[in-house]
Length: 96
Image: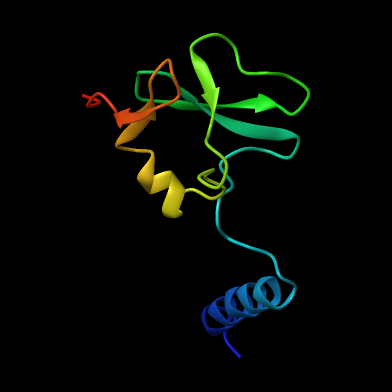
């Protein structure tokens, strides 16, 4: 078999192996040992170590509305919303 035909087969085998072992190609919002937070009254998000509380101006996401993977339901939802200083959901300022 020629080298040019072998490379696509190897790539396909690697992808199949990753899927069969439960390996995900989705990107996590935060690394292991971290949780996501969002900017209060502003657009933006960050990750904080599990052992720390968010700094002033940042908040944990409301329970049940925490994004886990880039592009998931809650990641998309929070791209247009944030929390005010009282924890109420509000429209996020547009990012330019």
